[in-house]
Image: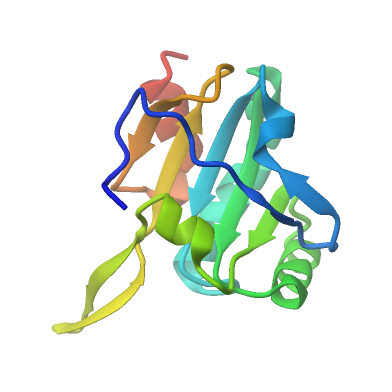
Length: 154
């Protein structure tokens, strides 16, 4: 799939959440949604990002944002991660990497000079009409809420 850009319609998401409940991005029509893609539960950067969003959940919620985290981890891993860090938002498992592919976050990565395929940490802000309002390709995991608020004019 071609890289998504600001103004594009957000690709549909039909899945289950960390508790096995049905999830549809379409049910958030009329609301602002933060969809953040991260490589793996319980890794340092992913934990820092999730905890930053958790610690600022009320601020983001007061601004009208819903938060959804997505990785290729399974339901069980997401549930443990969510419970361990008391995450007040939805985590979506994507073992088949369908959502990850639809949003164009799967690709080449580099670690210690070695190149491999994986999830590139990215965040999409979806507006009330279901369009992409902002894309973060360089996420500051420890200060992601500040990045979001600044980019959205708050």
